[in-house]
Amino acid sequence: MSTCSTVSWDLDEPVPGTAPVARTWLLLEQPGPWGAKALTSSHLDPALGRALDAAVRGTGVRIALIRRPGRHADRGVPTERRVYAAHTVPGGVWLHGTTVEDPHRLLDLDFAALGRGDRRTFDWALDGAPHQGDPLALVCTNGKRDRCCALLGRPLAAGLAASGADGVWEVTHLGGHRFSPTVLVLPHGYVYGRVESHAVKEILRGAREGRVVVEGCRGNSAWERPGQAAELAVRSAVGEDAAQALTVVRTEGAAPRWEVTLAHCDGRHWRVTVAQGASAPPRPESCGASVLGSPARMEVTAVRELSVSPAMAG
Image (cartoon, rainbow, N blue to C red; front, side, top):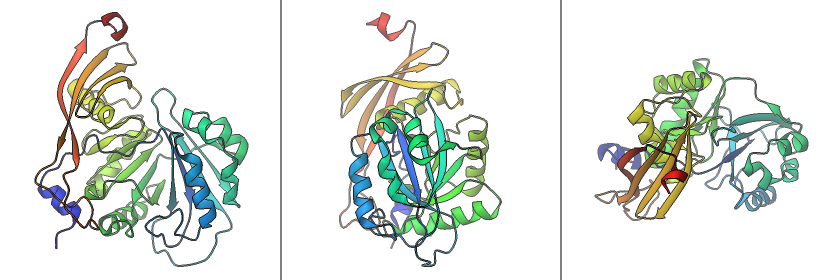
């Protein structure tokens, strides 16, 4: 039986505009096995997992569990855990880290402030500090959510770690199982699908230099899906790879059609038309799906550079 990722690949389903949405990521180390809903089905206190899940709703913060690549023997509760927070909106990108002994301290965070990009709440509550190492490569590997993530994600994470790449972690859930292996790169928040080891190394090299690799990119998690697709289309059209060069200024409309306005840090602006289509023929959206689906796809139909600013253009 074909896996969801094999079917998606065979049907050449486009990846732009499929990234998870989060202005700020909060990552908590949790070794050992993960269940399908890892926040409440791992060795993390399930009451804490439920509290964190409730606390981040509506704040722009997305929380996930991470662990180092390799075998995940059941070794009980760790004495220390690594914690990261990353804000991904261009112009305000940052990545901070810390170590905690008691993960309940995360409940001391002001999640609304964290979602707005205020790093002080992370530093004050958890003794956080700017991350000094290489960019983080977070590979989705939770086979309890979808077997493609385990079959394709775990070997990728293990291979990257074995090659000496720093900052490689397994992560619980990035969505889009059918694009496995899928990788989130922080601090800039770009997500990639169907990636191979050599491609991730190039992506990480670019991230260290403040650049974005467009090939295989699902989008920047800072934006909603139409904005993700529009930003990647502008990058392709003008050959822009600077990670923080483009900002989604405004998104007008609703499914199935949007007008997205983007600004470049040099003052240029574009208006991009994005249409929502349905992927055909129907296919499994995950290996565990009981019925076939027609996942939405973002289709860019026009990219227009504006001769004046959007405000002057009305």
